[in-house]
Image: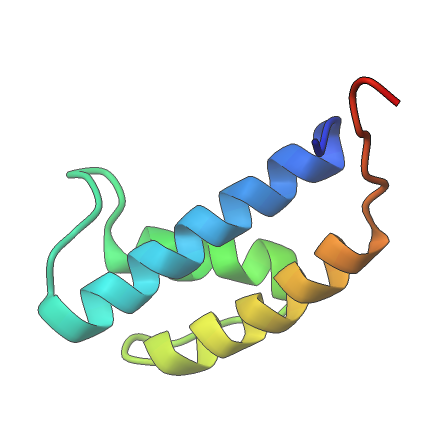
Length: 81
């Protein structure tokens, strides 16, 4: 189990990555408020880059790197041990 604020940030990044990929493929928004511009802005919060309109693939790839790095750094809690 992951827990703590870093785990929440990782989960948010995963959700944003999936939403960006979905929008890039189908033009379907995750929610009314999660516009492509908002999603690219959130991706930039994690990657430290500023994305322009249409850079969905780049943002998703950069997020994937950030997610894997965070996943490797998070401590894992196993209940019952």
